[in-house]
Image (cartoon, rainbow, N blue to C red; front, side, top):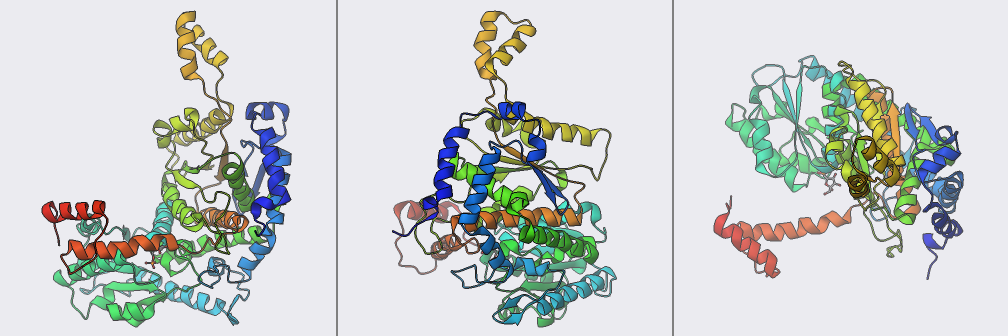
Length: 550
Ligand SMILES: O=P(O)(O)OC[C@H]1O[C@](O)(CO)[C@@H](O)[C@@H]1O
């Protein structure tokens, strides 16, 4: 049997250490160490991380850092930056860092520097954005564009959607931006209801140019355009594409000069920094887009060069490993206390779960340890009136990231102070909880009898000792948003590197696609001799009896 992660001395040391930490309460950890906030606080690239409200001691941190070293994390970080083929199953590097490599140092793939291509693509975006903004490029009736519709799914949707929404205060307000992802026809129907074909630009976003949802929605968009005043000559003015598969895009009918490049060495969920970010650049302008890249680049530099002990993505990755592998957590919550960042949980969910939802290691052997957590979350303070109850009193452990800007873009009345107080009070409540004694005393102070106080108190006990990180930045600017997302990308890599899995493939999504095609044949009454399982056949019969076929 080959040695695995669980055979490392640091792994056994962490297992033993967990037994010592589990009985301790964070209340006491804070009471015993006035320096705890300073001890477990770090910042880089405009992002501040308070990780003092975690079930850790200085020893936990040093053992986790040992684990990172024994698992060769520093070498693996370097391998990513050097363009090694860390996506082993597809024999490719994962070079999203090249897309924001504003230092322009050469980065080689197969002996060729890829930076000139990256710069050319940025230049192509720059010119395109300028032509649209200055109304040099207009629709078929010579009117300037008012709307863009980005058609794409997964990484070709979530990242750009998150960032364009996060940066709404920076929109130049000449263009509305819409996204169509779902193959549910209601999505495109609803979006098309609100736009004018004369002034609408479609951006078809697909790395592979083979994704069913995106291609089918594009066909609908094209027929709608042709039915509403457009024609085959003017289609070129209204449809552009971003893809690594130029040939398929051309065959599909997109003009070659309207195609922006993508590359094999960028994963879909890491692609918002490429021309997939066109909707971002069109809404906030190219300067804003470059500021976004510069924030990510600053985080890249920090990740590559900072000592492990002060390295933001490393600390976060290690904390996730601590909870997932040693303290039994299955999930991790992303809770942005910023209305503009409300799309962050959905993006991080794809980023993390598609990257680290793996159960075999790089050699194809099943791991004997758990890997990526379930990522969930939503906007604070809304979540406090929904799922936070489970965080406070449920039986499951879900560490949470509370993400909040120090300043609001919209300082309405005392709203930001209230929002901030809510955020801090949640992390404080999760950490300290409320004892039965405290609960009972409160009830007695309210005038309840001893009997009633005794009955009610157990329901009001909050165990506390629930971990959270507080992630802060001055304001959600292009630069800080870039740094924040890059931090999560690298956190995911840290964990994948330590778990010795490939964070850059996603074979698990393929089976559903394959089976979906077989089922579709049956739903469309196309010849198929394939007998499926009884449940699936029964459900197909229901569709054929009561559903719609086309
Ligand atoms: O950009 P494409 O090739 O259309 O892929 C869209 C998404 O589909 C996936 O492959 C998963 O099905 C994601 O990884 C990707 O982001």
